Image 1: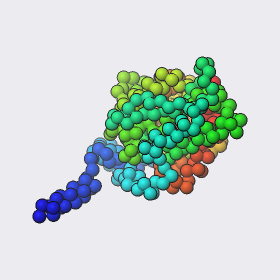
Image 2: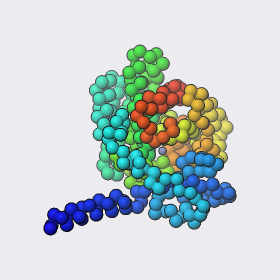
Image 3: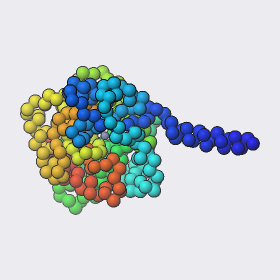
Length: 354
Ligand SMILES: [Zn+2]
């Protein structure tokens, strides 16, 4: 009797647990198209606008804030109830060709062992749940002369799995071409390049967008909130950026095929001198892959607390956000194609840094 009861309890628990997981973990996507821009500005202030879509916008809404969205715009249309569920529920079999967090760590270690003269590995902090935050530095010579430092990051949003594969693809292409490809060997001689494949490991292990309930790409201080307190994975990377005197960076996201530069928090443009440089280099990058390029707030919508804004605002860095491909987790057979789209584009960006 006892075992039957336990079994019944177990099954009930599983069903309820599955059907009713922690509410704040569910993020829904909605399509909105307000007639007044004032309403859209209010929506963007409260929620994350991810892309333009069919004459309107896609916004991400935590389940427990659904009412707030409908009070702003009653005609909002649900696109997907739980945006991470299809990715979260994928089996390892279905994710063959993708790294999980264990293989991210072992892969970094393998590259470190394979290229001891070109690489070094640094743990720059811990996530809220105490997972290691890891950066692999790649550079050709160990001279004392400071070379411009570049940072490439992926999986700030933990469900954008393709970004990690693109980052590893860039890393491996650079390392394996170090002896045979004169362009890549020159890049290695002239720059220090840091690769952080998983900015948000707590989200990545769950294949969830957020870090511990917080959108990590709305979690950086910004001019109107300069003392903003960030999630540990974000405050750690902010310190990393500062201590390594990063000159330029790309934060890879998925998806949408967009190459974007500051500002996100305002429609105002950068000073024309800076905008000209950003526009020139991103335009050149886009010539290799046909991605859309421009200022974040104009290409998507106004967003506060993003990495690109923070690094430019705080460190005058040449900071970009790139949305790769057309899905967060495409078939692994598409990984080489999406990597290829981003090779010349990324090398061109690095070479443009003085
Ligand atoms: Zn993202």
